[in-house]
Length: 132
Image (cartoon, rainbow, N blue to C red; front, top):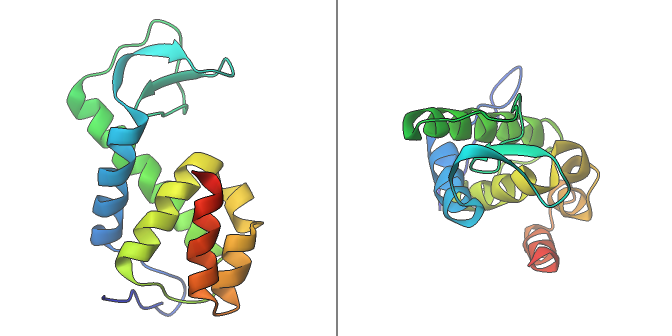
């Protein structure tokens, strides 16, 4: 497995991480081109995107692709801000997919991130099983 390396002044989110995470997220979220209220009443569109969604909004497939890429990038960057260790690309993509669902704030406060930062990658991966 390839490992992403931290760069001076911050972390770079690799295109591979973004692509892999989006490929995992999209089929599980399901794509809806018309805005709808999710199970807690939040307006949602495309692949579970809630950012700036309004009633009656309609998106194209291309717009949904763009929204997903932007949201994955945002979640990946947010997650990386609270990690102190580099991760293998596939592992990072899995953690970004999880962050997409729980949110950056919850992810950064999680046992999973604490375990990554403590060097317990196996323990961090096992934390994902609690979310199935």
